[in-house]
Amino acid sequence: MTMPDDSSDTLTLTRDKTALDVPWKVIVHDDPVNLMGYVTWVLMKIFGYDEKKAAVLMMQVHKLGRSIVWTGQREKAEFYVQQLQAHQLKTSLEKAE
Amino acid sequence: MKIMPTLDGGLRIDAEDKDDWRLLSGITGDAMSHDDKLSHRLGEFITDEAVMLDWLEYIVPELEDAFNAAVLHVTTAIASARVESGGGPGPLWITREEVFHWYSALNQARLAIEENHKFGPGEFIDPEQLPPARRSVFLRTQFYCAIQSMLLAQGMG
Image 1 (spheres, one colour):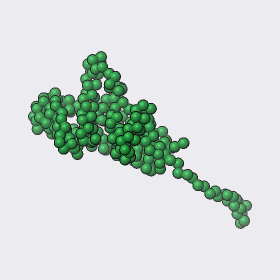
Image 2 (tube, chains in turn red, orange; image 1 turned 120 degrees about the vertical axis):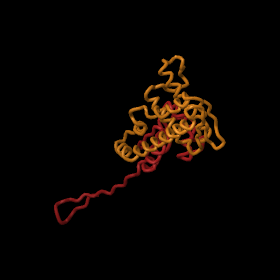
Image 3 (cartoon, chains in turn purple, blue; image 1 turned 180 degrees about the horizontal axis):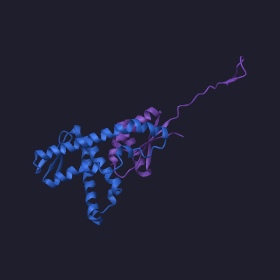
Image 4 (cartoon, chains in turn brown, red; image 1 turned 60 degrees about the horizontal axis):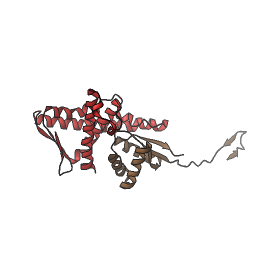
């Protein structure tokens, strides 16, 4: 929005901006060390997923090399990354497209 | 060495001689055997610069403290049990409350070994085909993995 300033020749430019809170993805990456049962257990413990959902995500990590295990606000995503890494899982955080 | 579950959700490890104690004491050395700290390696896939800066400042120090605490706990437990047994036959108890410390220390050892030796998934390796030094490391990581499986089944399942 552009508003003329009557008292001078200067134009004051203001903009109304609404930024959507971009969601962030928490991603677990595969490694040859962590046991499949352990990864499932960690996903259940941290996110409260039931065993079936946690096992599906674990298999994605195992077969595809990575899995998006959670999507949401950055602050909470960072918390989950910390929790997953505390359980020694390689984890990253990416903006959702 | 014999390892068995306990009723309280932990494990009892019966060492039989000094070789068993030496094998158990190897957990600490293996856990600390890689130059790059695990706390840093866990974030190798973080690419966003702002996230990386926050992660280095706030998360890495906490991870490092927690990992060190687990290794210290296990080191102390093994050393105490070894002294009590006089280096000969004797038990080492892992209570339910200690299970995660042990799992963590063993995992640190296996992750460091993997970084150093690149074995990959162990099920595809025939230890008989490995040179003696490498075979010894491989068998150690398999031993650690076996304890972890018992801990997972017993205290974390």
